[in-house]
Amino acid sequence: MLNRWYLSLNDRERILVAIGSAITLILLSLLLVWRPLSNGNQQLESAIRSKTEQLIAMQHTAQQIDRYRQQSSDTQVTGSLQQRVTQSVTGLKISLNRLQSANDETLQLWIDRVEFNSLLRLIDQLSRQGVAIDKLNLQPLPDRGYSKVRLTLVAL
Image (spheres, rainbow, N blue to C red):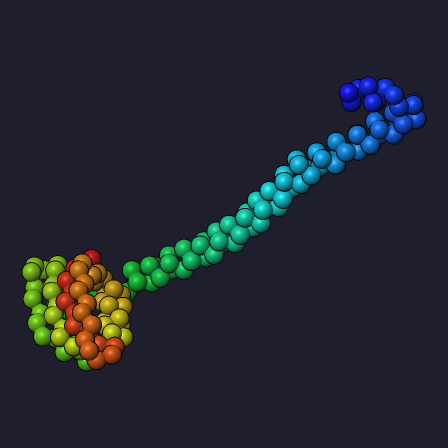
């Protein structure tokens, strides 16, 4: 039927129909194929830019971490684990309820009431002195910002 209609057209109309069909095919291929590929390409390029920025930030952070590690390894650690902990606790005016040494490299601390920020400062000081936290148990107290703490520390 379509073929019969096409053959009934005169030569000039057939040329117009052929040109219109070609233009329609080109536009459809542009809309159905080229446009999604182009949009996907743009999305991938923006993802690459974002990931590149993240990589640069991570590399910068890694360099800072390396510097901090080097600085912390440069500091001289003196005294036993118990001496280092006692000095840090005393310096921060934290009152210990119990201090128990399991061996030369492990120490347990019980603190019934400590301000959380003071606890963070203590942990920071100890980490700079080569002491790591093996176990940490925090229980919030009714007083805002205070906790009951049980720590197990290990000398590095």
